[in-house]
Length: 285
Image 1 (tube, helix red, strand yellow):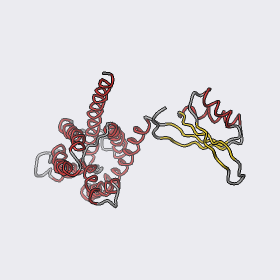
Image 2 (cartoon, helix red, strand yellow):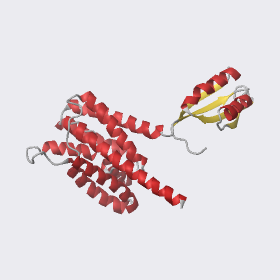
Image 3 (cartoon, rainbow, N blue to C red):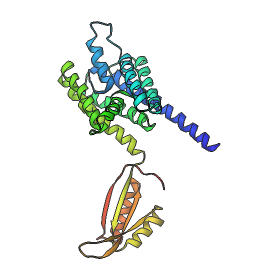
Image 4 (spheres, one colour):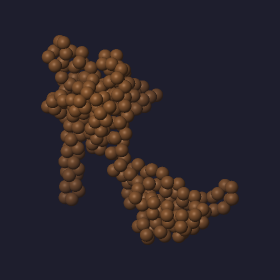
């Protein structure tokens, strides 16, 4: 019963993250990218271009939610046959929520005509939303899904490389149809979105990984085990210059514990060789 209850809690959490994440992505489009004409790639970027291109034909142009839904539908049909219904169901929910948010959130100019503010606001809002969606193991369809489908045919290229080409083509179209300035700031926005989403996803389990080679490895290990209450592993290591065998300590600590650790090593063995690097995801004890 406990395991079932936990699973239900995780499902509820995932749906909350999906709703909030797709809402933030839609907000960035309606409140920043569309009013500023910033085409940041994806099906929403194509939607911005189509809406502006059809302003003289249709009052308000083709709605973004309609373009997003219309472009996703054939991609989902293809994915259903080529990638399986389980994958499609997960992604379809996120894509449907995004289209729904695009339909209900009104267009507003959050940046007030300032392209730099638009890049910052849009990058922060969209990056946070994308991280929430990715946290559930889903995607919002769009060029992500299209890149996955094309990867089945073009195996020599990674999904990331194909996605870069697709989004690059959309941004390039924005350069010719909307102008150079919005396109250049759109590239800045993409960089901010990537940094923000990565920081949120990786920051959930962000730690420091440390390697230590020292003649006082036993004393340093005792400090790690009993003072810092952390685990530690000794790896046999042989110095190729001296041909001596030593113990290389390996451990993972929190960011705030690094300074305490370095002070300890400096006090016990000033000549110790220490490597501190990032550990973006840590699982287990």
